[in-house]
Length: 279
Picture 1 (cartoon, rainbow, N blue to C red):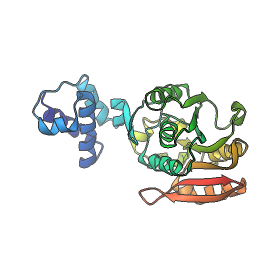
Picture 2 (picture 1 turned 60 degrees about the horizontal axis):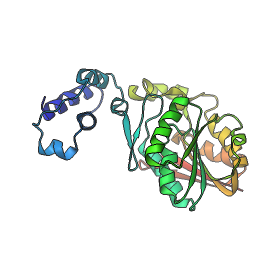
Picture 3 (picture 1 turned 120 degrees about the vertical axis):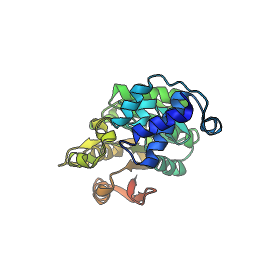
């Protein structure tokens, strides 16, 4: 089939779930990735022949809300194309802003720990953004660690990935102190599942997304308490947060003994990031 014909077919399939603009963007992502061509090649030669293995299956996956990143096996993050599959969350643009914040404040050679690393996106990007940083990424999932190690080997081989439980006393795993601890843990209350689109609820790992309604700060509190024992004097703790829990996060961190708590909005104007310093 010709490139433009495949693009139109994929767009029609994606349009069953997304608006016209997003459907076209998704269709193009699939065509470029699976067709092995660049966007410029598509523009210059739209009538050239292209062969995409499993095209019919891809069409059905798009119609069923399967995320395009899982279909093509990768997600763009910062200046990288990271491998992803259903075992890890798809990296979001908001998380890039958190990485930029850390990279702008961390000193050269800083020791940094990313908790719940998933695809490794934060750990890897911070390792590339902070000169001579010593970075660890921790996750409880073996599947996630396999993906993170693959991405790390490609983009930041110095990052060390280790298995650990954020709800345990994971400080006992490390024989070093850290200048920065960062996490984007599960934070969406179970009752908000009905507000989420099927491409998230039906495909992304629930253990990395949702928390009990009666204790939505369970991961934040556990990490904050353990980080007090892990951080150097004046060390900083960074979180990506749920905008509806912003004030609760400030209160929790101050109650745990942190100072200089700062909230930041994301590019949509929502409070999605927070930083606190050890007293």
